[in-house]
Length: 145
Image (cartoon, rainbow, N blue to C red; front, top):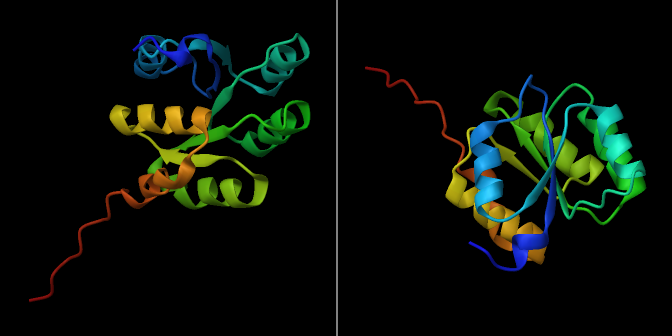
């Protein structure tokens, strides 16, 4: 899909030893240039060395709030999407509400939905995005006999 996203730059901040390869493939296939960072220092280095990402994907980690605040102070208009495991849903929603993340999504991703979310974040129409968090699978209820 080579369209206006071909020149868009996405910063991917991850908390693992290596970046999530399927997500990298999706971003590359959509034509995004990807900046990788693993911690607050690397994010600061990228931002102070002139990087101006159009969007940030921030994996929920121990210092996610500090990283989000760093991004917002350096470039306040960048949409930040927090990525979280289902067990961290409440924390992700709190970060979205209290600290101004653009959206929160749960892993593992539905890549079709994530692609749509990226396009909306970069294009500015978030109303459809809100359904993402409502698609979280609910635990099965036990029936009483």
